[in-house]
Image (cartoon, rainbow, N blue to C red; front, side, top):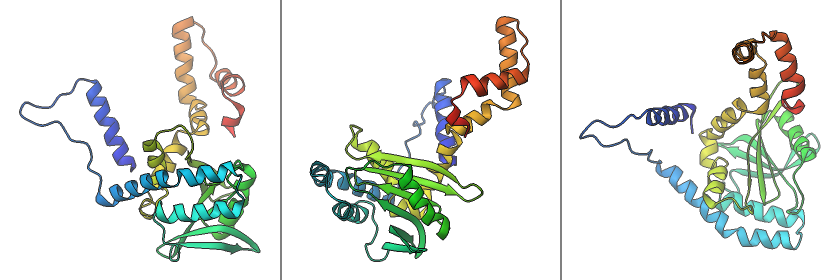
Length: 258
């Protein structure tokens, strides 16, 4: 969903909270009608989640190896996310002597790397660093980690240092509803990737990340607003610098400042 669509939705919610009603004789605005390509993509993802639930459970139950996990992921990438096995996916993509499990191509352009781990292995920072190396060397923005059960998508912003943001995470065997799982995985479909919808999702997540919110809280504007509210409530006129220190050292979590 684009930022404009999100803003339109927010504006509609605000108007509703203020008691705005439709004019007499006019119908209330209808919900957005999804284009056919999106409806088809979502239906395909939904069907694949149902179809592969049992095989995935079986893999986890027998602690299947990475090769068997990769077979399921290949099927899911094609049957669920809409990639062509021969045109859109490349396996064992070589990057400076190392091999990425998958590369995803959209219109022959490499857009993402996928790193696969065995179904019983929890995804961790070490796995992310591994696929990050591939992305840095090839100038690719998107990195996907999966053990078949959990799918994570990370965005990399080039620079010194590079900035890595988690855009989405979904566990196919969790208690979350089918609709929530479908909504998350939709952004990894070929159709959504081609239209860069995942970029909109990433920007929204990055804008409201703990780090971004912490940076806002530590601005002089916010600190001054806090100072005024404290004075109104307690008659104590704190210094802005002191408010900064307390927020940084005692209120915010250290990891949110990194």
